[in-house]
Image (cartoon, rainbow, N blue to C red):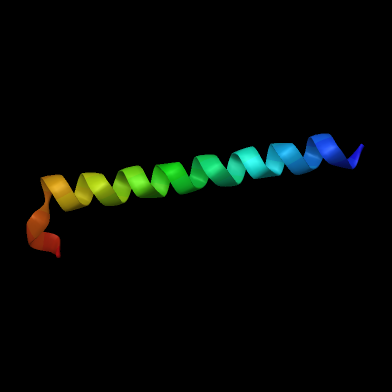
Length: 35
């Protein structure tokens, strides 16, 4: 029963990381004055 929970959490963490990377790239490319 622990395996499905572990994989679900892992997928959620990957999704969060992807969202943060996308947000960072969006700010970096479309708003360079911020940096």
